[in-house]
Image (cartoon, rainbow, N blue to C red; front, side, top):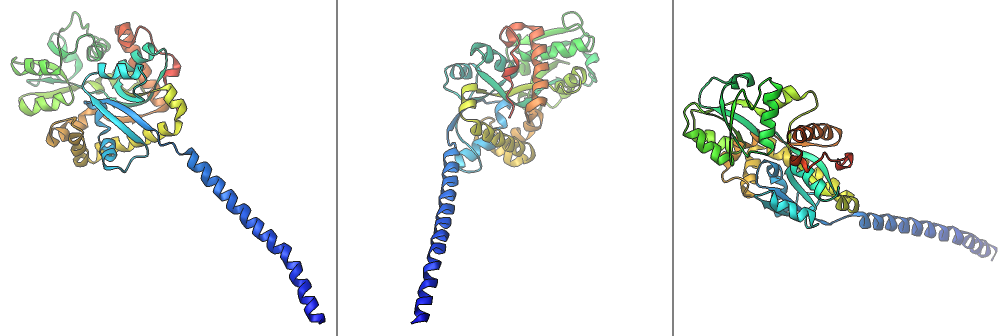
Length: 343
């Protein structure tokens, strides 16, 4: 009888310990569920409305576009629209119908002014894409352009201002020491070069590669990005394309913005380093018509990913040059510091 009573007492003493153990287990389970719930709530699956031009500024997106169609490989979700004119981006950005856009550097400044400062530059996506070509072998340096006629595209826009800046910084007066003949676009310059003996002209990539493929007597005599970098000073790399985003979208979806930057960086690396796959993706996105042309053009498009302080320093220099050439080219005045995004 005494043994039975002792056993009963022992069991009674164990009951609180079991209860405590069960409570601890329940607490741990509840805490784990709460953490998982918080993580689930923090996941932002917002679809990014993304626009880009069907040129070098959009080519770095080719693998991202491929991944989106395949349903895997990206951190964020995208609704992508490739357009042929900057005008097709301006309206949607101002009208809050586009969240992120790949645009020429001067358009970023213009949209900042037009929106009342409601956009930011996320990163640089394209360095310079301009090349001087000649039918001959007389141009070895910028100084050799003195006294020459130069055909160039898009008067009153970034190519003209870049050309004028490089000439001036090399001691050449663009209005007196050379004859600049500006034509409507790259196609018109290519046609003029093809029919003019000893012609010298400036072409953007990928039109440069397409032109050289058909006109084998021509060669690249000057890389305008290299020439800019020589005279602009350390850290002032020529930038021609950037990604912008609406500030409201950045503030509401900070993780989506970070995911996009990671996705784009991975995409541009693939396009640049895996040339066969990159060219295939560029053609899939209908940015260029053939993989052969894409393989030739991609290296000259200077697709890149630059963010933070390095991006800010380079973009500021480029915008200053454009502002000095024509205030209207950047929207009438230089943007404030808050145009630059930093993560």
